[in-house]
Image (tube, rainbow, N blue to C red; front, top):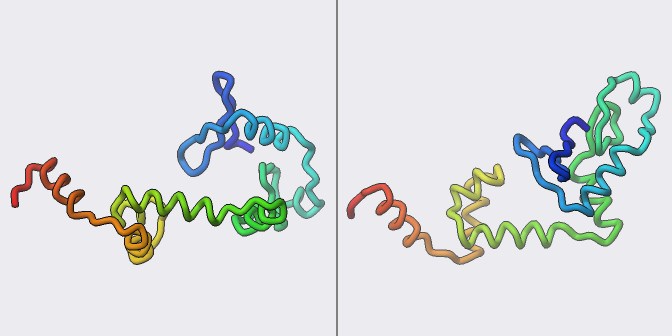
Length: 136
């Protein structure tokens, strides 16, 4: 709950180290969720006073990414295709080393995404070398 903030009429959710601006409709839903009463079990109350925006089934823990995916799937929202499309679009514009760092994935996995996007990085390497003043 501490990662949810309002500023200048906008709502932000801190994911990692950076706050993410929520679209107005999603912000309304998240704020409604935050203001709804918590239905924690006696065990959950004994574990600690931290209130989670998305509590998990285990007391004292947030919901897992798998739990979110399963809930979205039950409502007919398929995120795998959207996530993979976003990764593929980035693989067209970014080298594998950047993708691996950005998504915290193994470099071999990032290389496969770039190969799938079929992008030749010779122009990128040449431009970087030119920017850094390296000659052939």
